[in-house]
Amino acid sequence: MGHRKGIWIPVVTGLIQKDGMVLMGQRPRGNSLAGLWEFPGGKIELGESPEEALERELREELGIFAEVGTLRLATTHSYGEKAVLIMFYDVHFFKGEPKQMHHADLKWVPIDRIGEMEIPQANYRILDRLTRALKTPAQPHI
Amino acid sequence: MGHRKGIWIPVVTGLIQKDGMVLMGQRPRGNSLAGLWEFPGGKIELGESPEEALERELREELGIFAEVGTLRLATTHSYGEKAVLIMFYDVHFFKGEPKQMHHADLKWVPIDRIGEMEIPQANYRILDRLTRALKTPAQPHI
Image (tube, rainbow over all chains, first blue to last red; front, side, top):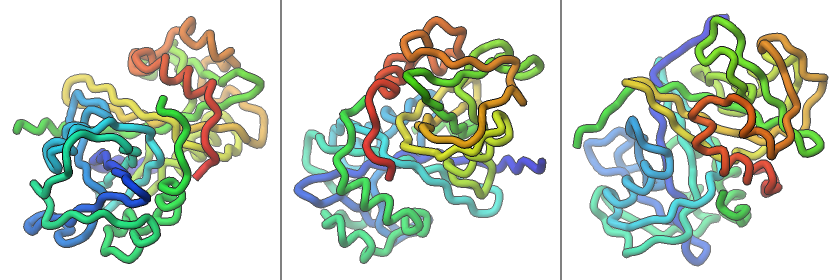
């Protein structure tokens, strides 16, 4: 049945929310997709749970101590034999003020304006669902 | 920082629910973890979204046409340099009666009795959260 296996890269991202806005970071030079705006996060390392990976990434990239909330949705994006699997988690609570430690820039973006930012194609394709997730309060965190 | 990359296997599984019970399948002989009980599903193939992969797997394994609902939680489990990432989706609606096309056996299990089944360790570690997810109605599907 032609199972195409590929090399998978699992990524966790935080939908960091405050006052109807969500935090976006601009990918730095030298990275793939430099200049595009993303939800902060990064790759899961071996041995980490998705939540642990996201806590670590948000600490490393933004200097915040985040309480990772509900998993809202996931998407895939493949290019050649590589594919990313991106999972989006609510982040409503965190300690510290997000600092620009990794990104070229940071911005609190009103939910309806995410589509006006230059975002990676993998996110653009699920923009409607992301917007809906951001506007719909999640069930209590399980 | 010693990023351990590893080989990731993303897996989607369905929490197929009816009348307070959830469908479990016993893994067939010759497979890894043969004899253990699992939630039906399988690997995402390149080019598929998680939802598409789960629809295909449930068609191939059970002969049902499932409407994949809300993503409820995700977990990882690593062994050596390999790791699985398992995502659990609600499945409340499907056409057809689940048939034993792949599994050694199928069983509708009351939610509180999942822990009495022989289940893979990766599921056992999140059994409380799985049970909570199954007992808590999800937000509307985004």
